[in-house]
Length: 168
Image (cartoon, rainbow, N blue to C red; front, top):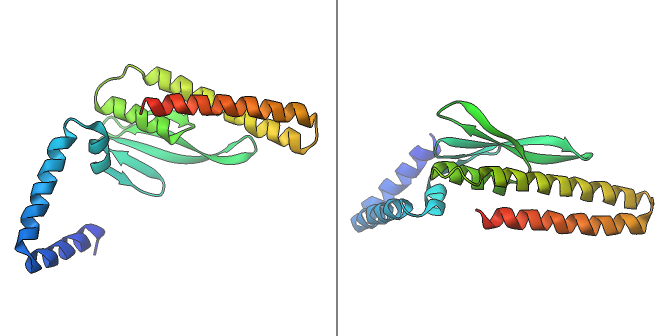
């Protein structure tokens, strides 16, 4: 039995116990659907499907791809337009960037997508620097200088992420 069939069976049992529950559930569902028309975050929340390797929102899928990055394994994100069957964006460093871009596509406001991509590149570059300077500090190669560079790269990392989060 699928999880959808399981949920349907549970709801049918609840409705049999309390018929009023079905009416209340239906009203709540209608209110959510109506509110989602004007609230992109709500629309995304009620229309997403999450698996271990992807998140599907409306006609878009965000694939989670593990890759080697600065000597470590890091998740990157590809955005796929399911209707067109094409990859729109590859190897985004932050899930938040991918979600912000998908939201822009959903509401048909493509302006700002390039800026989000650029901020994501800034984040990835700063993260790379953090990893490299930490590695150098561990190897005791100019430890003080490496640690100062780590602090600087961390600042840029958080600045880029903050700018992306503001655009979510």
